[in-house]
Each structure stands twice: as structure tokens, then as C-alpha cells.
Amino acid sequence: MDFKYVIAWVFVIIGALMTFLVKPIISKKVEDEELIEKYTYIIKTIGMWLVIIGALAIFFLGGNFGAGNQ
Image 1 (cartoon, rainbow, N blue to C red):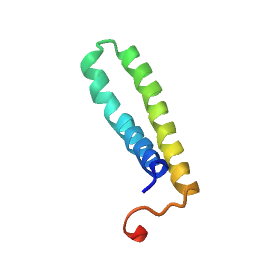
Image 2 (cartoon, one colour):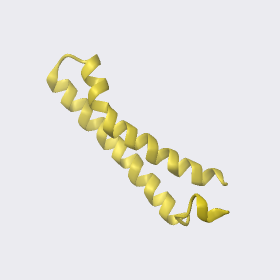
Image 3 (tube, one colour):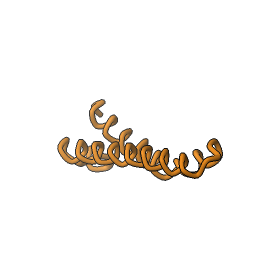
Image 4 (cartoon, helix red, strand yellow):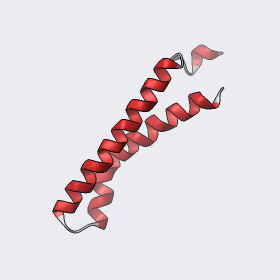
């Protein structure tokens, strides 16, 4: 397995975790509702771009990962 395949999947996983877990984590740390919404929007945007970059990398690298590579 090549490192370029792994980094694409890491981008997808980290981006998805950022997108889904940002609201609960930020809500615990910040009291101001306006700041919560601002930070949530920024971090979700970054997370979605990581998912898009990872998905495009997987697509352009061949897209097969797992059982088909044996």
C-alpha cells in the first residue's frame, strides 16, 4: 500500500470527524452563541473541504482500496 492512498483516506476521516463533532466540542468550550455559530461554520467548511480533497484524491488514484487489491 502506498502512502498517497493512506493520506487520502486520512483526509476523508479527519474531515468527517471535524464536520460532525465540531458543534458538541465548541459548545462545551465557548459560552457566546454568536461565536459558537461562527466557529462551527468555519470548522465545518474546512472539514468538508478535507473530505472533498480526500475523495478526489481517492478517485484520481484509482478508487480501489481493500479487498480488491489482493
